[in-house]
Amino acid sequence: MPTAQDRAGTADTVHGRVDALLAMKDSARAGDAEATRRQHAKGKLTAYERIGLLLDKGSFTEVEGLRRHRATGFGLEAKKPAGDGVVTGWGTVHGRSVFVYAHDFRAFGGALGEAHAAKIHKVMDLAEAAGAPLVSLNDGAGARIQEGVTALAGYGGIFRRNTRASGVIPQISVMLGPCAGGA
Image (tube, rainbow, N blue to C red; front, side, top):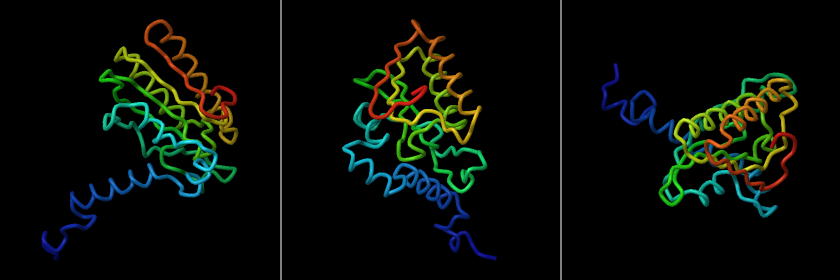
């Protein structure tokens, strides 16, 4: 039977599991290296880089950064990027709380699917509950057609929340690339 000392630093320890989680988060933020290169070649920033410029340094707290879609068919079961094409969370701008989401064009061209929409719904609900502004950084291909009506329903949830929050909290949309359909 291995001792605690023998297992130190492995995935079987709390420290090992925390290290594994941090590595997963770092990998998710980095994304696909080739997709990042293509984004930069177009003179565009990644979603994380854009959020980093918007918010006060070190203030960003991400929500569901490891969430993946559950769709099957059309080859989607083989491609499940962490974050599902959108970065969501909150931070501060000049010390004031702000909620934000940014399409990540590196994953599915920033197209919205069910999990992607659920992340946006969550951050929109948090912004409204907190009475804080919501900023959307849009750079996406509209609905992820492979997910069919669930993607379209996701836009319905966003539009419903836009309407409900109208006149309640500031909602700022920034167009930073192609913005098809609901985007």
